Length: 267
Image 1 (cartoon, rainbow, N blue to C red):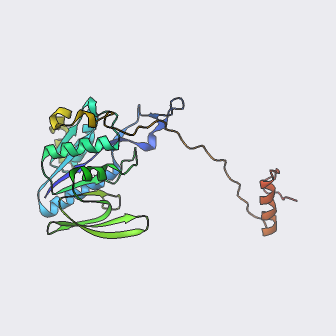
Image 2: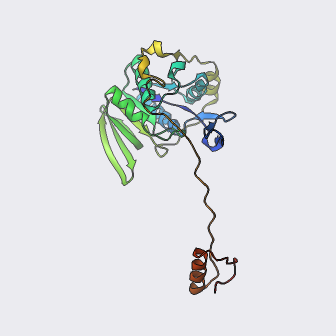
Image 3: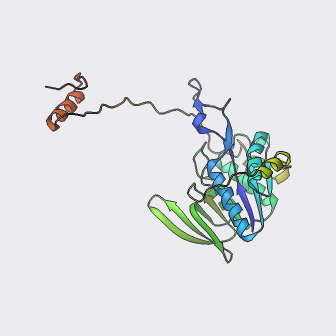
C-alpha cells in the first residue's frame, strides 16, 4: 500500500500560557512536539505497511523547525518525509491549510490511503482532514477507533457523540485517527540515528503549484481576533457533617449572603 500521513508540529499545550496584555499565546520557550493524534495516524500507517507491504510518506506544513516532527516520524519507521514551508503559507486558517496540504499531496503523487490525526491540540478544530478529502474529491471517515483494509476497501469503526458506527469505504480514502485507534510504537535506536541525517525535501508554494490567492492569509476567510482564558470561578463550599435540616439551613443562608462559618450552624 502507498500511504500518506499528514502531521503537524504543535506547541506543548500543557506548557502554553496567555500573554495578559495581548491575550495571545506565549510560544517563546515552549517546546514543540508531534501532534499526539498524528502519532496514532502514523502508527496506523506503519501497521498497514507491516501487513501489506508498501510505503509510508509523511507530509507537514510549517516553519523550518517543523522538520523535527518529521524526523520523529522517520525514527519510528516511515519511508519518506516532506515539508511544505514558505513565508507565503503563514497565517493560514484551516481552509488555506487544507488547500496547501491537498496541493502538496497531488504534487507527490497518488496514494491508496491518506491518514490524519482527528485534530491538532493547538486548534482543536478537527476540520483539516475533512477539508483535504473534499479538495481531493475522495471519501473520508473521521474519528476512527478501529481500522482494517481488505479487497480495496477500508472498514472503519468510528466514534461519535451517540456511540459507534462501522463504515466500509472504497480506497483511495482519507481517515482521521483518534487516540483509541492504537498504541504508537517507540522509535528504534537505528531509526533515531538514521533520522538525524535523513534528507527532508522542503517544498514552497511555487514548487507545488499553489495558487497565491488560496494560501496563507490571502486564502484564509477566518481569522483569530482574540484569545482569552475563562474566568476562574469561586471555589464552592462543601457542607458535611450535618443533618439534612442543618445542611439545608446552611445552604439557604449562603444564598442569602449570610456569613456561616464552616462547621457552624445557621439559625
